[in-house]
Amino acid sequence: MKKIVSLLAVVVFLSCSTNPFTGKKTLALVPNSQIFPMAFQEYDQFLNQHKVIKGTSDAQMIKNVGQKISVAAERWLNANGYAGYLKDYQWEYNLVDDPTVNAWCMPGGKIVFYSGILPIAKGEAGVAAIMGHEVAHALANHGQQRMSAGQLQALGSVAGNIALSKDPENQEIFNQAYGIGSNVGVMLPFSRSHESEADQIGLQLMAIAGYEPMVAAQLWERMKANSGGQAPPEFLSTHPSSDTRISNITSWAPAAKAEARKFGVTTFKN
Image 1 (cartoon, rainbow, N blue to C red):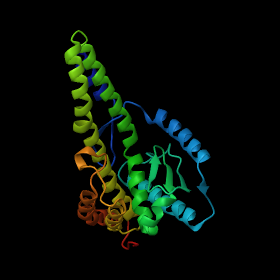
Image 2: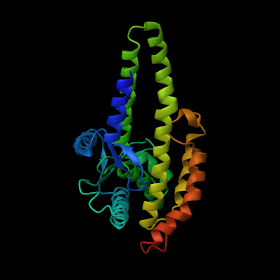
Image 3: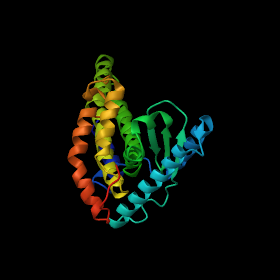
Image 4: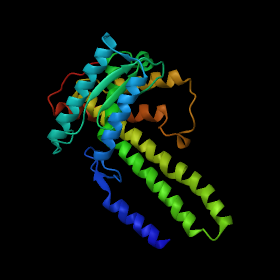
């Protein structure tokens, strides 16, 4: 068991990258050179299976805002010593006809907005708040980290079962405890930290792109109202509560605007 734990520690140490926005070391067991092509293929398959809205003002707005956010990201990265960070990105912004209240950005810059989220966005600045958040997930390699953490979680389970292979009773207890403990104690907090990180990075991106970051707090007020208050307790959720997000965004917004001013941005669109 000690050998297995030591091996896992070495694997983690040798498989880390740096988050350019936080300076923190992050899990990177699977390289982006493998993740990006898979993501691009999945994105194309998704578009082929869904109705993509083209030629409308909303579809054009998604593209326009997406381009502004990607330019803001490149400006920030270039200014902070990460020139070329986006060289393998293939930006694409599509609006899909679907009532689901959702949007996402795949690793490598492939973005989808569902039409169902537009009434809650309430215009361009709201779209920028959503876009900034989703793009931030990709820039911070959150997908790569989730994949890596999932692999470590599975390896931990295997290690425990090997160690207890001659003790079936305790092996069963271990599997039950490990399943609950690793999810509630590790994976869910890990996911919530990613959401908060994407909120904070997204505020900077939308501000550098010329949008008022406090619009993001207003967006989450509407998200909260749309959910009707139906949400699991925060410690059992992959996301922070709406109240937590609103509080965090309100406290982070001034710093986001200050960051934008370093790039000559002095007015912010609501």
